[in-house]
Image (tube, rainbow over all chains, first blue to last red; front, side):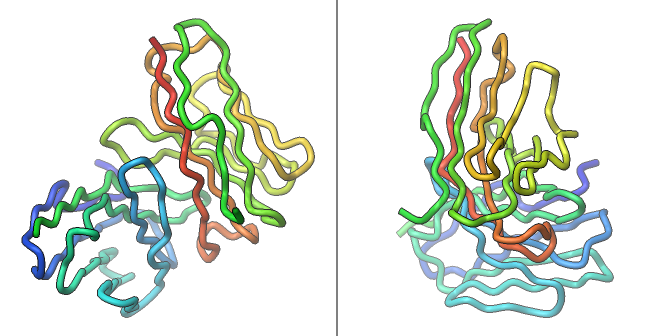
Amino acid sequence: KNEVEQSPQNLTAQEGEFITINCSYSVGISALHWLQQHPGGGIVSLFMLSSGKKKHGRLIATINIQEKHSSLHITASHPRDSAVYICAAPTDKLIFGTGTRLQVFP
Amino acid sequence: GAGVSQSPRYKVAKRGQDVALRCDPISGHVSLFWYQQALGQGPEFLTYFQNEAQLDKSGLPSDRFFAERPEGSVSTLKIQRTQQEDSAVYLCASTHGGRVDTDTQYFGPGTRLTVL
């Protein structure tokens, strides 16, 4: 069993749909990272959160540290949101989930 | 630019060749990380430097892998006698401070290594 698991692995949506990606982890951490990886490899940090909810534009991340679960939501999805979304748990190093590949079609 | 850069972006090596991958972190960033990302997988930790000190190399898969950061800035990941299973994207990231849990990691574009 991986220490950081994401679901779903693949997600297809129509433009405008509300998207939810889930992340569960078994390690003890005080914060969690959400990252975005576009084709070609570049990874961008989206959020780092330790409690509650954070919002940035159409992206919302929530975390429940006690339940060891986090979700990333995208409102009014757009084709440019198509990417791989990865959650990562910082122990003494970052432990990454396998990622969720999102494709948003017009 | 002011971001993390890596070179080369693509490298094709014949099995048994040695390769060297370079990472230029953001200027002034204390910490530097190397990750290996196999196709369809999330990145996996290889090694970590704080300034010139290699504090953790527990993720290096074998003694064929060697990393250095002699002046606390540019880092090189060297792979000796490459094998096909070494084929992956090698990512470098840097952070301003030394905290994995609170510092944002800035990633380079990666080097895609293909071993034939």
